[in-house]
Structures are given as C-alpha cells and as structure tokens.
Length: 579
Image (cartoon, rainbow, N blue to C red; front, side):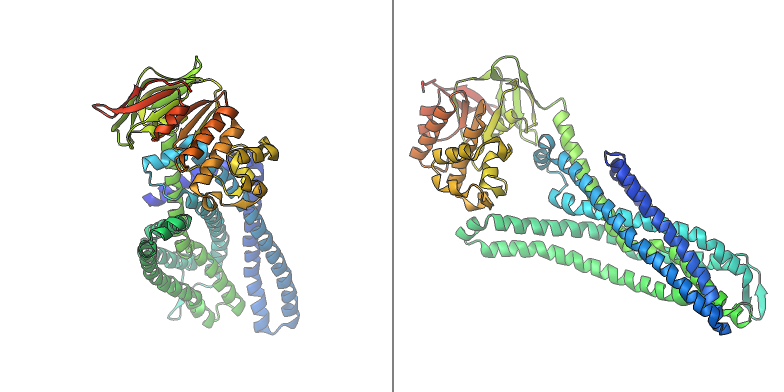
C-alpha cells in the first residue's frame, strides 16, 4: 500500500501539469469526453441487464411478439454501444498523442536545457538510457494511466449502478437452502464482495514480484539496445581490431540478462495466469450456483435468473478490477518509477548548476576572459586545475600544452559553462560568442548543409557560403553533396570531420574560437593551412588551442603550459611569440 500511495503521488506530479498547461482546455475537453462516453457505456450495460430479464422470460413463455421486439431493441442498444466505443477509442488516442507530445517536449526541454544531459552523465545518475525514458516510458505512462484511470472509474460507476440492482434481486429471490428461505439482505452483493476480496488478496500475493521484474526488464532491454547501437556506430574500429568475437560475447552477456529476467517474468506470470484464469472461469458459474436453488424452487423466472447472473457478473467484475489489471498495473508502476527517476536526475543536474560551491560563469566588464580564484575539480572532488588572475586577452592567440590528463579539455568545458565541479569565477565579455571545436566534432544526421550549419538553422547561411567554406578547408568534392542526407560522423574520416568543423567555425565567425586538438588527425602541412585559413578569414577571432605539436606554436602569440603542482595543475606562462 505504501508503494501504491507513493506511485499515485508520483503520477499526480507527472500528470497534472499537462492539464494545467497551454493545452489544458483541449486536454480537459478530451478527457471529459472519454469519461462521459464511459459513463454512457455503463448506462447501456444497465439497459442490457434489464433486457436480459425481458428477453429470457419471452423465451421461457414462447412469446414471439415480445421476442421479436426485444431483438430490435437489442440491435438499437448494440448500435449505440458500438458507436460510443469507436469514438471513445478515437478520442482516447487523440488525447494520448497530445499528452505524449507535451510530455516529450517537457522532458526534452529539461534534459537538454543548460547542459543538463551532460551533467547527468557526469554525476553518474541512475537515470540510465534517457532515450528509452523519453521515447518509450512516456508512451507507456500516458497509455496505462488513461486505460487504468478510465477502467477504475468504470468499475466504480458499474459497482454503484449494479449493486442497487443486485440488492433488489437478492430480495426478490432470497437465499434458498434445504427447502427454506433465509433472509440475508443483499446476500448476492456480499457474496460478490467476499469472492472479489479473496481473489484480490491472492492475486497480490502471487503477482507482487512482477513490478520489480518489469522494472528490470525495461532496464535490461534498454541496455542491450544501447550496446547494439554502440557496436553499429563503432563498426570500423571493431573490424580493425578483429573484436567481433568479443563484441558478440559482450552482447550475448547483455542479452542473457534480458532472457534470464524474462524467464523469471514467465514463471511468475504463469502462476498469476493460472490463478486469474481459474478465478475468471469460476466467476462464470458462481452466480448461477448462488441463485439456482431459488430458481428450482420456482421463486424466480428464467429472465430473473439471467438478469441476476448478469448483474452479479458486473458487480464481481467491478470488484475484481485489481485482479484483471494486475499485470498492467505492474508494468505501469515500473514505468512510473523510471520516469520519476528521470525527473529526479534532471532536477539533480539543475540543482548542481545552481549550487553556490561550483564554477560560476558570469559576464565580464572588460574585453577579456578572466579566471578568478578558479579551482576545477574532478566529479569526485579531487583537485585538477587552479588558476587566479589569468586572462585570455582579446586578439591574442593562445596555445595550451601539457601532459595528457592534466585537465586542458576540462578547462575548456568550464569556460563553456558545462563543467560545474569546483569553485571560482570565469568572467566572459558580455555578448561575446564562443565556439568549441573538439577533436571529434558532432554532426547531426541530416543533409550536409544542416550538419555544417549546426547549431544554427541551415537558412542562416546561403548555399554559396557553405560551399565556399567547404572548398576552403580542402573538401571541394563534398560541395555536390550539400543536399544529401547521411550519418556524416560515420561516413567521413576523422580528418574530413575536423576539416568540416573548421568550415563550421568559418561560417559562424565566433569572437573566441577554442580548438581542442581539433586538427590532430591531419598531417602538419594540412593543419598549418587550416590555421592560416582561420587567421585570414577570421581576423577578429581570438584563437585558443590545445595541442601537442610544436609546429602549432608558430600560429599562436602566447604559450601556456599546465604544470604539476602539489594538488593538481597550475597555468604557467611560456614565451610570447609574434604571429
């Protein structure tokens, strides 16, 4: 019960914002329509129940006129019922896609806002596979919440409607045992209640482990899929290293978790199904057993018996909602737990960015990037870089050198505002534009124009400018492929990707350009040509590079080395050189 209360509180927190959002009137209208149709369906079921009495009495009495009339009456009720169910499904699905779209946009916004997705990785949060949480868990949440919510409402209304009918039928056909009428008010209602309570308790005892098993199944499936994608994206390196057998073993190990947990679900589901199927079959005959003595004692007609059985079945079904929906509830509860974990991870990443004891990036009053009392740490708190009173002066190109692992790239991340671990202040000129070019640039799947213009819209640059930039960096053969859609990170060599990264910088023309070994895959003459190209095309851009080649010093006025200190590394000035 504590778990269910916690789940319901989480569902309320996740669900309610949509019905208060900018789409609230459409959302509330669709939900009201779905609920109204469900109430009308329950009303039709009450009419069907009364129809049972009249129809079967007509059969017993061999009354052709009443029989014919009741067939027509049934046809009208059935036509209305079918129309209601069709439009209920249509409106339910319409509400689902609108709700899911809103929820997806909300999670995408929270996940991608202000580098939260990156900080979530740094923190090692339990929110594994955010792609699955956004793509699959939101769909499961919306679908199951609506189906279970409407189903529960239907059960409550059905119970309220048919309890009155069944109570009255109990008085009309009292319990008849051993030739005697035993007066127990509403005995059929109490029989249905006892039957449902026993079934519910046993169902929960048998099926309780399914919630945890379903949670693990979703996790294992996502992990297996993620590793398959990784193997596909790194196919060349796997082939070069002849690592196919190792990858197959690793993937088989991942899938063994999927299969092992699935077998546990199978075993538990078999036990649960064996009970619920037995329970459902017994429920078919149980009401007849209860009223048969009264029928054979001629206390009721055939129509009354059929109406009683139908009403008893409706009450029993309503009371057995928990039993019939148990597997769905287990899946739903697991999905809610995963979305809750995802929201907490996003909140934790946002909180990390607003904590006082972090690296703060703020606007500067002068024209330089200032590092003041800066101490950059690793996520575990170990010191990495210390700097105070250090400036990146506008117009002065700077080369960073130092041993691998000293934190050069991490310093760039801190300047970009995505590395919060540490303390101190980084001041950046107001309205200044910064661009980071990593060693392996990112290109979204799409046309080549889209990939190079990223993160701007393609329309921000004319095809002629994009073609000129591609040609300038030494890739004229790609000009004819500007409109081709492809996975460019997979199709192009790392050297070609680095050339396109420079082309991107030429288009955006940032005030500060940070190159983190962004030309390391090129030969030295090609690297020199690109640096000369940047100097010619972007004379107003301040260049700040990380590199290990001595040839890069010729393109920078300032050399800064990361030197080992008692704790971490410090910035040490080298000899300034004219460019």
